[in-house]
Image 1 (cartoon, helix red, strand yellow):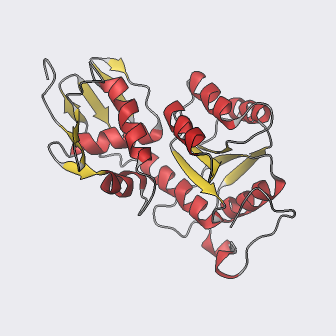
Image 2: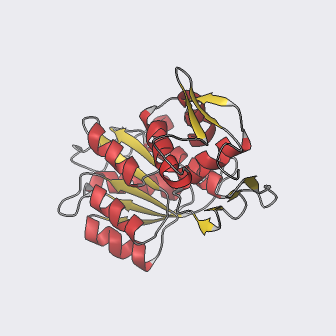
Length: 260
């Protein structure tokens, strides 16, 4: 497990150790350029070794300004971002990346006591998080899950509901002809709900079907639904597309908006 307080870079042994034989072995493997941002040399070293063993190209940054320089020079496919950075913190980095218009998936590294910051990070547009101490294998799986979802099948049909159009193959969405600026997970969640109109899903089901988690923090879904409503609803406080089913979860209702 990786935490903030290791003194030396030490790779776990046995089943936890990365091996060259696992490179690209997972189903639907996608090689990516991953930017890892953490001021802890141990975390950077271990994460880089595991991601490298999985076949990814890894770039390292130890602070916020370095992360922004790296991201603006060579746009990453995924960012692994520690929240507790010296100077320019992880939340500010996340905000700056989104303000630049950059939409790479962002996986936050958070401590157990940082729930408020974690939720704020999701509000700012982060896609996922891993809580320290964590298994590096879990992080590699999270990176792979995001990459597989961004590599949509070329034959995926366009999803349309009135003025809302979602193209899973091109990974673009628009509302009344205007492009929607969606993060990776926002797009995935909207596409999933729109592909299953009239069906209610629990937060746990959405975590499994959209995030690929078998367990996790349900507030992640709540935050992403709230952000989606701000982008696709005429009145986010009285949603007509993404309905809350009390005691259950959420449901997409087609044709419930004017002209829909």
